[in-house]
Image 1 (cartoon, one colour):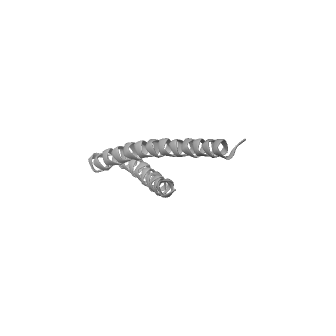
Image 2 (image 1 turned 90 degrees about the vertical axis):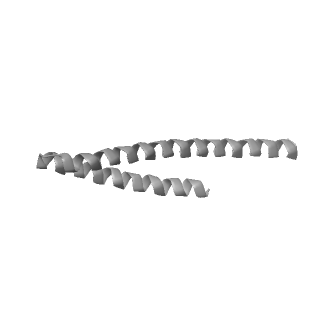
Image 3 (image 1 turned 45 degrees about the horizontal axis):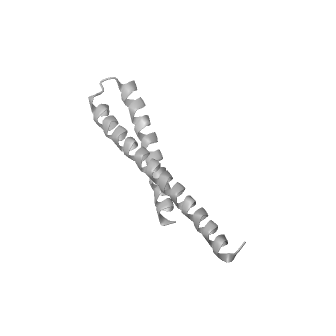
Length: 82
């Protein structure tokens, strides 16, 4: 194979990896948005909840969502750097 063909194949491969990474970034952004919306809903529900057990359960869900969102934001930063 000549050099030109090899370089074209290599360029196609890099282009494919870039498209795949960008698609992954888009999915991650979408999930982060959904988690942010869910977090807002839970933050509004907790003060309104009269049952202490339900409020505690909602608080735990909120902590989990915050932790997962932080992980997602770090992953998004790493993917964006590449």
